[in-house]
Amino acid sequence: MNVLSQPVLGILTLYMNEKKQLEERHIYQKMIVEGQKIGLDIFVFTPMDVYDDKKKIYSLQYDPKTKRWSRKWRSFPHLIFDRCRIQKSKRFEQLVKFRSRYANLTFLNRPLRDKWTVYTLLSHKPRFKRHLPETKTFQTMNDVYKIMRSHPSVYIKPMQGTGGRGILRVDRISPDFYLLQGRKLNREIIPAQKVHKAKLGSYLMRWKAKKRYLVQQGIEIKLPNGRVHDYRMLVQKNGSGHWEVTGCVGRVGPPRSVTSNLHGGGHAVSMSTLLKQYAHSEEKRNEIRRTAEKLSLDIAATLEANYGALCELALDLAIDPSGSVYVLEVNPKPAREVFIQSGDSDAYRTAIVRPLEYALWMHKQRAAPS
Image (cartoon, rainbow, N blue to C red; front, side):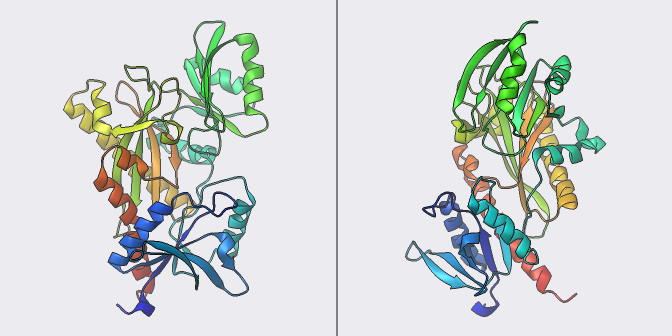
């Protein structure tokens, strides 16, 4: 293939700090190596590296031969894979400007809305309703009490944010007392504490402060050993432009944690290992897996139809002891490490390669005469 006609993919990301460090550099390295094998030229850039006046990007390049990163001036790519996660920084403000200024470029994926908007959209579809925990916006204590009338536990969670940060679990343990436990915004575990109902309101309103929070019905996700668990399902567009399941992994939280995120000290295990802990028959376990996969693919297609281009989504699922599947939240910028940690190296490689195959397919579609 002649280099001039080679499709170019720019991976758009954000620096984590002022030292210009990248969070997923090792993943981008692998993507660049795999891209070379299929004829896709890939570089990495952030909005800070875009020079509007020159119409050039001072990109980050990785050379698989020398195993070194370097800088190089590049023209705008044919396609952009947006890997930017929300952060409170000037860098994120630059990203918002870049997205609007260059909205005419071809993005593999667009930003997803906040958790409440996504929940509202899905809850209006009858086929999803039974798979969604009851959820409300947390404005006053009435919102909490309404859900707690029919459910003994609730989660208070930020409307935006990932990694289990800022999540509080509230369990009613007697008519007068509640048990609170969770994680601060810096992921630090808050040990379980008993709170009298007279003090619950002031505690929760302080926790929420002026931020936008949700109240969500708690699903029974404790394993026999007392630890919480959930499942991370990754769905991606394939090289034919169709949604496909890449893999699903169970995540088990550390002791005393109300979340199972790996960043918060959780660990990954295979889905089948976790499902066996409930002593379901093999037939029942297969049925649960099929339900979870079909649900995830359906949600991906629905969100894309409503919010624009997407190429991958991770769905956090809860499966209760009876085998019912619930969608806790949807993450448009999924990490891939969960597959390595669970020992599923095939799914890990697929997770890296599939967006590249999709980018190549998309480029061919655009180049084909209409």
